[in-house]
Amino acid sequence: MIVEQNVALAPHNSFGIVAKARELVRVRSEADVVQLLSDARLAAAPKFVLGGGSNIVLTGDVRPLVLKVEIAGRRVVDDGPRATVVEAGAGENWHEVVDWTLAQGFAGLENLALIPGTVGAAPVQNIGAYGVELQDRFESLDAIDLQTGRVFTLDAAQCAFGYRDSVFKHAAPEGGGRGMGLAGRALILRVRLRLPKPWKPELGYMDLERRRAESGLARPSARQVFDWVCAIRSAKLPDPRVLGNAGSFFKNPTVSPEQCTDIIAREPGIVHYPMPDGSVKLAAGWLIDACGWKGKSVGNAGVYEKQALVLVNRGGATGGEVVTLARAIQTSVYERFGIRLEPEPVVV
Image 1 (cartoon, rainbow, N blue to C red):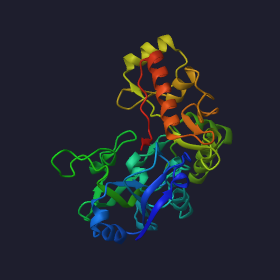
Image 2: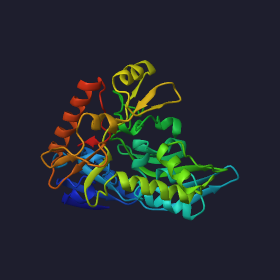
Image 3: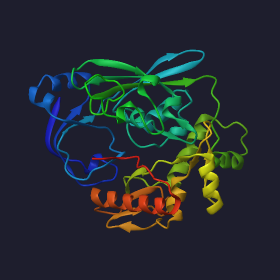
Image 4: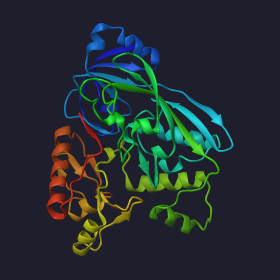
């Protein structure tokens, strides 16, 4: 177990916001957590679990004990006639694992290429893109209780996946017990993914269908879909190593068909997608752009010129500036459309 003091967190958050962790433990194995919990002082300290830092906004130095997850490892658990199950350590880079599965000949994760962050963070956020969500490929995960040190396994139902949501984003209920809340109480160790057979490409999104039509391929390979997704994301989203950001900053809101009809009557051009449950998903980026925010800034925090859904650090932005910008956008969208945008990143 490696314990460090006054650790700069700018390299560990994709926004590149300057902040420090008063104390940071690098977790590279289950044993590190067990050792940490055997130390009375560290065990009693409030804890903040940090993966790739791609979904957080730091508004100051982090007072809780930071657990930097760096658990490695990739393996094939089972390769049967109906599915392949692969497992990856929570500290593995998500995109690299997607690439690895394809290199092994296992398709199914290609639509989730180039999503920043770690494997352990993927189920927390129930990441998704281009018609596929993590829950569609999820088998199970192992986590460790940060109070008892007990390792436990959760399946998809126990993770309570929702749109960019899971049991790991909610606090435990009053009176103890895991119940429906594991935020701050558990650290994910390993994640297992189920890649179904036979494979078929998921091309329901317009950008992917356009690429397919341009290519003339009736049935593109998984690697081809992977390459298309990487190209589309790279064109729309800035590289956080060049321009700090946390990817899509707001969730796409859902409304009833009646609400959508009302909005379309006022805004015929609004981008919307019918959902299987009968609701309608609206494109948050379109709403923000319609309010005139694309390219605008508050201090050193700005709205990306190529995609209004992305907030960026133009150089030296503070977490406070990012939050102020986000709230101003929320106010604009609510005043014009009557819709409340919900941020995706966690404000720390």
